[in-house]
Structures are given as structure tokens and as C-alpha cells.
Length: 194
Image 1 (cartoon, rainbow, N blue to C red):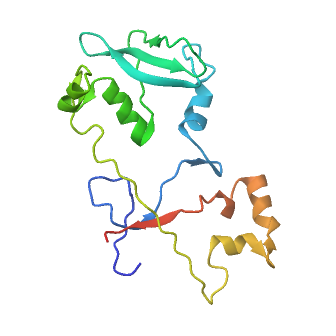
Image 2 (image 1 turned 135 degrees about the vertical axis):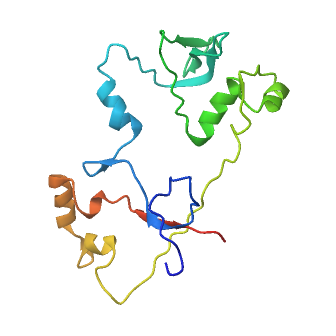
Image 3 (image 1 turned 180 degrees about the horizontal axis):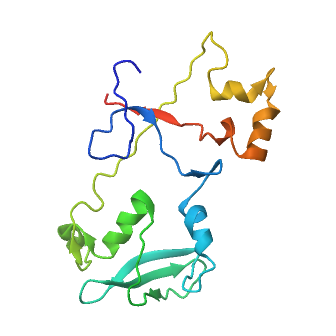
């Protein structure tokens, strides 16, 4: 990556994202983890937690002081078209975890977003936040691969033995959760301006 700067943290928004570096991933004990597997699975035993699956949140509900008091949602398979609500106890929180597209949609349906746009849609404004739903971008990837005369420099070369699957990395991962199979397959990358 000659001529490119090193970026030690692609999530540090106080500097330009351009550069070459290692991606941060959510991994524990040699396996990828999600928010659910890293945190929620442990909390499922708590008596003050109810998890609803196959539910689609329509909006966050607010009181007169513009404090979240719960959510309105639909359940998969329910044909009554009746909205369901989940109410918060005092001091409770609504966590919006719908991703880059779903989270702004939930916020905007709840009245949080650009006031003019919400008004055009007949949604009462709870908070005029013009940035909600804006600047959504994807970052297309180009996987670059090339043959080199030097052998054994890639992760995949460690996974092959005489043209077949090498059992050693498989055993290393199964027994110790370590080795090349703990790789996401894309641990390094670069953000460039073209």
C-alpha cells in the first residue's frame, strides 16, 4: 500500500477514514459474536427482561415531556391489525438497534428527524434532528487477489496441504479456538478516494 497512510481505527471519526489498516471485529474465543450472542444471551435469565421475537417496531412512544415510554409494534402472523405496545417501567430505556437503515426509519416514524420531512408525512415532530436518515452510504468492496512466487504468505495457503484441506488448522480451531480459522477472512483493508 505504497503512498497510503496507515489508519489504526476506521471507526475514529475525528480523522479522515482514508488509509490502510486492520478491521475491528466482534470476536470472542475465536468466533464472531453479535450483540445478541455477546450480551443478550447472558441477560436472558433476568426476570426484568422480556424478549419478543418476530416483532416489527413501528415507533417509539413518547409522553408530553418527550420522554420515551415504550414502543408500538406488530407481531408476525397476527392478522388482527391491532397494534401491540410495550411500556417501560420508570427509568427504563428503549434501545434502537435496527441497523443503518432500520434505526433511522424507526426514529423518523417516531417523530425524530427533519421536521419539514416529518410534517410532509403527517408525523408529529418530537425532535427536529435533520441528520436522521441522511448521508446513508455503503462502501463497495473490491477483493484483490494475486499470485506470488513466494509460498505460504496468505491465510488460505495455511488452510491447504497438498491441494486438500489441511486438518491442522481445523483441529487448532476445534481444540483451542485459535489459528487461521479465527480470521474473518477480511481482517485488513483500505478506504481510498477515487
